[in-house]
Each structure stands twice: as structure tokens, then as C-alpha cells.
Length: 176
Image (tube, rainbow, N blue to C red; front, side, top):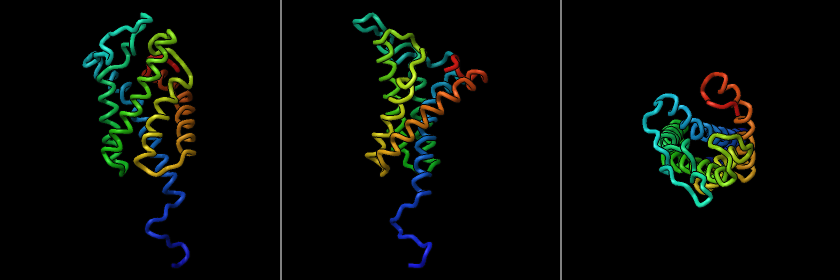
């Protein structure tokens, strides 16, 4: 083999970085899709996933801001984006569903802590929706645990830094 050539099955550093960037883009897509769907669709299709159910602690199961519209928007966007990024549609769907499951989990925990809907909870707002899809995605694609941690931290930091800007632009309702 000449220098600079690679085996067909070998993975380069740039391949790893590209996959990590694709995963980060999918995370942003999954988590921004509900916000954009709300902004575009307004009051349409805003039925809450929990149907207004309350738990024994007299707090909502998830809260009004967790809607079917947002869930379907996230699933649709991550599925389409995965295909555009040369990943399978099924990976995009599973990744998006896992991210939304992580987001629902954090909402469930926030309600148990008696935090109001859309209240700020650093790390609880970002990590479950990043860690869960990245862990599930590891079963489907080959990437390291280091990548899971680094992408999760990068997602969290970027969310915290960009959120105030999105608030100023009128995309988000609150500046967290």
C-alpha cells in the first residue's frame, strides 16, 4: 500500500469528527424542532402529551409545553436530516425519539421537583435529551464513550450560550 492510501475498512480522524458533527446536528435538530413548530404553527396541534394528567403530588405528569406537535416535529426533522447527512432514516427516527424521551424524562423530574413548566434547570434541561440518544445511537453506530460525553457537554454548553440570543431574536420565550 502506498503512503496516504487507506484500507477500505479503516476509519480516519476526519471520519470520526464528521460523525460527531452529524450527531451534534441531530441533537440540535431534535431539540429545536418543537420550538420552531410552535413558532410556525402557533396554537394548532398543541395537545399536551400527558393530556393534562396530574400525579399524586398534584403536579402535572409532564406539563402543557410537551406537545404531540413538538414530538412529531422532532421525529420528522431528525429522520429527514439523518438521510441528508448520509445516515439511515431509521437511525434518525430512533435518535430523535430517544432525544425526546430524554426531554420528557427531564420534564417529569422537574415537575416532581415542583419547578414550573419551561423553568430553567441547568444540566437537567440538556443532559438527558443529549445522553439518551447518544447512548442508544452507540448500539446502532460505532462511536466511543468519549464521543458520547464530549458531544453531550458541547451540546449543553452551546445550548446555554445560544439560548439568550434565540430569546433576543424572538425564537424562544425565555432567555435560558
